[in-house]
Image 1: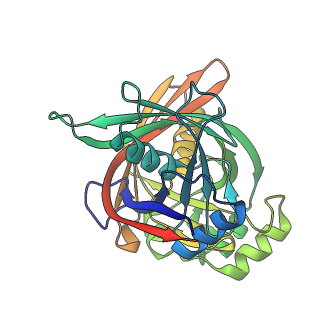
Image 2: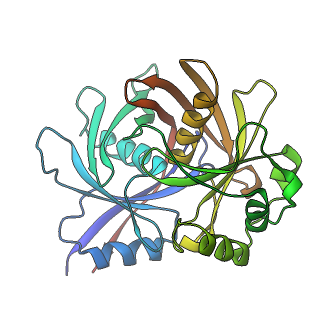
Image 3: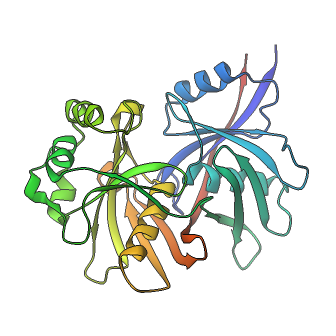
Length: 297
């Protein structure tokens, strides 16, 4: 019976048991789609990654990302964490790894301390910013157990945006952010009223500090099994691109603080810039190794 090694780590933190946990299978050759999905459900984390040989030998690997219920085209903390794991195995080339994914090619740049030890990684989202349908303040409130007046629409209406993965973004007051909670029935009703699809309606709530560059955030996606996420890299990168698109700056940097209400504080460093094909963004942060183990199938 084949045995597959795995590692777990915490992403977007420099403290063990903070940040967003991730499981990585560094050599997933021989695993079927059904095995990958079953393993992701068994780990019960927001995502689990499976590393396969690349189609193009110029790239590092083909990386498949599964949440509890489905495969994802791209995600932030799985790429940061997988890059950290593979770099620890010496698989980077000059500090860079290139992952083939459904959403496109993802470049990962590892970070090191003064002594040369790995500390984390930074990724570029695979696509430029794309905006989608909007929600009403009442729909956001129904999903997040809030009142419509808690949803702030002066900067923008609640809107779907993507750099590879779709999220709905809504600004709320800092006080409302702290008391928000996912309402499954509200998500189900809102999903049925939109084109988001019943299995993938992800809501990213945020409250910027007065400086506009530090942002507190929370992410709820209960219909895909993630009632709350401790750190959502793909959404944070997309938020940075969205915020930049609303102003006149050519580039900006943001610090996204997430996971506080879950007891898993996370810090995500986002940079966004205007490019010839639209607004693009990157996201990075620290990683800490936690467990190693094996699964026999």
